[in-house]
Image 1: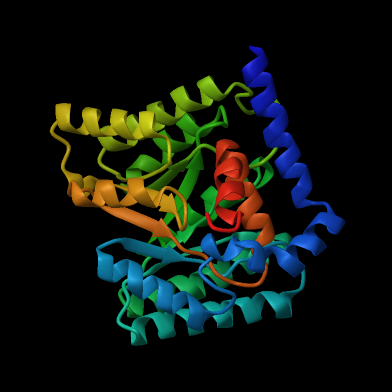
Image 2 (image 1 turned 45 degrees about the horizontal axis):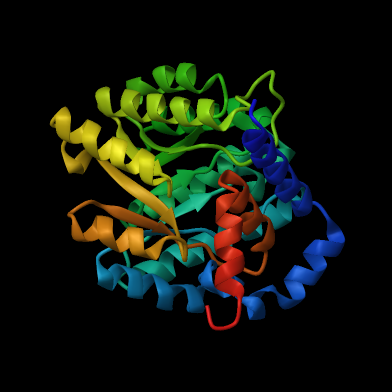
Length: 313
């Protein structure tokens, strides 16, 4: 591995280690929104988020949102989160927004057991269906991939079609998982991955992750699923555009997904060229782990965020 790649890996590890540092988190929680984190998180409550979601939809973007949080190990708290999501769905519907949801199973009680998580996410998916809304189950650490896929498959087998999930290209297993899911003609978001994983199960080299990412996107596009290409990487975006054009793949079969506040110039450029672009627009007070993991997916984003937080940027 080259010195540049080693530096990139060390940078990424440093970002992720900062997620679990209580001192850093406390300082950022206190001052982060004033320093500029509000550029990347749509607000600390649903009222603030709706203003930003409406602005994006008025511009022509698709949107999703999530109530930031994770790691709930109390059943009453998990049920309260379910209630929050049902309230959020109702508020979005009342505002006339087409925004879909992304949810984390750990935020819905996965650490209390598969049955608890399934029951809670099914309540959200069922309520979303009554409003014509879509729910995506986010992917978390490698230890939770099996249960996440199982819950997704059980939802689809039970007749819930308004639900999708996420696959991470840095895991060796992803190609096998994708092939297994194709019987459902799934709606899949493809990401690179944002957790620290050992080399035994994940590609340590960024170039290998990128190659695996394109392999996953091409497989999904070639086998009839709906593909959410979640990246800010110009080279990957250009490749996907060339691949879909060359293979006469309709723009109705895929979309680009990007983060709120990052590469807005690129987002608008793709939209102006007729591509569907979804902006991931999270909200809530527990925004720090989310933002740091997004930076770790592509450490160059951290420099971008730092520049944006400077006065006058």
